[in-house]
Amino acid sequence: MNTPTIHTDLCIIGAGPVGLFAVFEAGLLKMRCHLIDALPQIGGQLSEIYPQKPIYDIPGYPEIKAQDLVDNLMEQAKPFNPTFTLGERVDLLDRQEDGSFIVTTSDKTQVHAKVIIIAGGLGCFEPRKPVLNNLEAFEGKGILYMVKNPETFRDKKVVIAGGGDSALDWTIFLANVAERVTLVHRNETFRGAPDSASKVFDLAQEGKIDLILSANLKEASGNDRLEKVILEDKDNQEMILDADYLIPLFGLSPKLGPIADWGLSIDKNAIEVDTRDYSTGVERIYAIGDINTYPGKLKLILCGFHEAAIMMHSAFKFVYPDQKLSFKYTTVNGVNAF
Image (tube, rainbow, N blue to C red; front, side, top):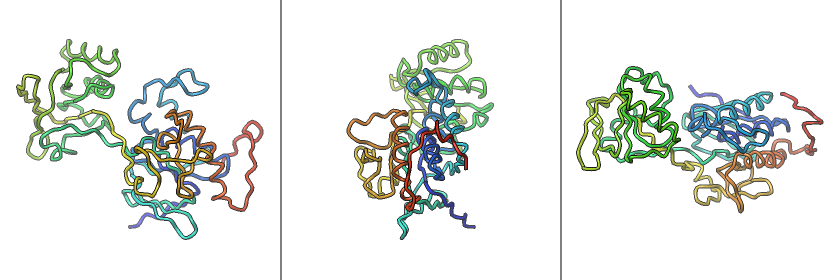
């Protein structure tokens, strides 16, 4: 059965902080938004990678946790009723005769919009995969690259590989969930937060987790599902671990994905824009936030917020071609919900 096409004024690709603030700026100008994100929840990197990390350079907030900022942005956008397609990647972009676009996702969801705004952060994130024999045979059958639901690992034998914050944080968390957690790291020291590293060493000393340092993943084995993970230490000695799950947490690498084929001007995985309105070289397509580039660009959330405000005033003419835009302050006009 075909899903009906979603009709909106603006289609925002990316539901991170800049995409969410763009909804607010669009709403002030009476423009409706539909957001698409490949991640299963809103918030982009903030929610996916470091929800509990403090951010110190958001105006008016001397310190705010990443997830709290996402929650506040969602609250700010709420009067304008944004709609979302989550857990789907944008695959196709088709220009219509009237200049509008139909966007098609990986799950064949279609969105018809007058304007496209790419706010995809660093693009589509793909996990950095380890060099491991039989890796592909066990992907989704015991090898996972992110923890979506911790309960999946209840009373299971879990091997986590990595030395950053994500590996440390999930080792600490899953120590109370899994039957046994083993953290494997290729070095003697961790690059994650020192207090998290200290907690991991304490858990290992107390016998609550197994910690294996100076070792690399070598091979995954099993019948239909993952059963064993084979490691190799610095002396080329093998270690065999029983495992229901292997979670390699080596970070995410940004890729533009299909957006790279849309005829935009791209420099080093970022989209070049005109700083007068953050438009791309293709009419009705804008790019804001970390995904764009221009001389003097700073990859800061607050810069993305500024870009969102300016580009919305430019996009207005495509949504309301017969209206003249008059600028009004929210202190005068307030926020009028749809």
